[in-house]
Image (cartoon, rainbow, N blue to C red; front, side):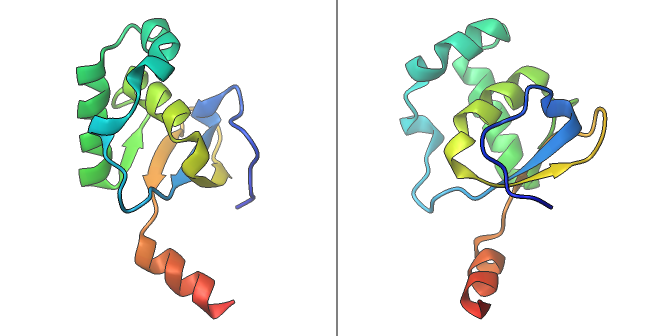
Length: 109
């Protein structure tokens, strides 16, 4: 695993580990900020919220499951990416980090 700085252009070859803040609430996201991506992937706010809920409940979201939702969330989560994992073609996913595990690792350092 390596640290990343910015997303790569071919997101299907990488997976991203996301650590969301405790107070992150999708309903308070400024969707206008992501309107270009929403339009590009021909999706809607409702679809993004649905993809986010799937992501949180499953702790991951595969690009094949919801391509448009994945791509918009990937952009939205840019500030919360803590790792990029190179996995090869068609392996892209967003992975929700477990805060307790991250805290334990950080406390051990």
